[in-house]
Length: 386
Image (cartoon, helix red, strand yellow):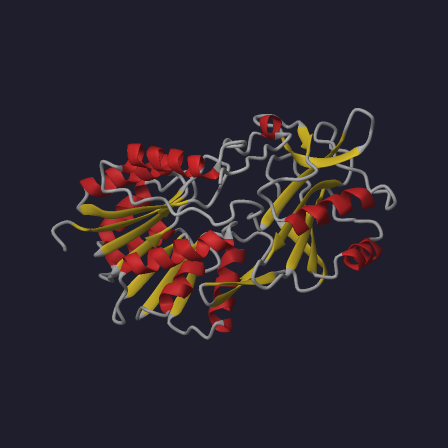
């Protein structure tokens, strides 16, 4: 049976989905071809792992608020390479309930006399709304990003919102009073619930705060992490480093198979969550540190300490040379590199293969259907080690 292709009405203006209107099998074939071209010289690129259902997978939904020319309140996303807001009624890759909540907030603003923020004048209150949903636990967090700390009738606003969506477990005001393109400011004010949600991944439960990184596609993340752990081939006597550890997801899953895990992360909120996650999952052989992962590993090497495996999951920009040289100095027997940026992965693999490592396996995983992004898991081992 031929796959029915539905095209999003705002795909050209939004620009987030480069494969709109393309059958899913063709999307996967195009990504596989690109991964082979970029990474094939390092090792055999395995067939990409696609999704059973490539729609409505994003557990994190963000909308920016504005007014149209008639003065009506709109919410959506920025048009590609501009700060012009494209109104969106339904996105084909974002969680349906989260989208509904955002539209409901938009419709509530008039009766609560809440004005949307104007980027040019700095006038107005509401800038963005961010909704995060735990797909396994069904807990929902609503983050309302405002230009000043005073939100009128906040308790009544929460009451009205929760009347319609009782599954909302926490509501947080995030204060962003700077002229910035960053979505979130530094200050969070919890106005309902605990200020975080929980979700379950690979048998562990994770606490997610407004500012913490958590993979946006939970179904494929299970596959991604299970593959990464399998590639690492962990033994009970081994020390593992989880660089860029975030809230401790991969480190805590790995801890069940290793002697001990050391997680390092710059974001202090994420480190706090990681420590709590370790306690809540009753994992005693994982420690988490706030700081620069490269400096941390360099200090370990200088102090004669050793790690058997390094998991690295950097941002799309990849790792800098300072970090990469710290990995080389630490000299682990295996590196498992999880990458959401194939171009920077190719650059980093070039460096690692010139400094004593061989690429053994490359597994693409489609985490972001309809977009041209692709995640990869690479196993590297020290040269001459079989």
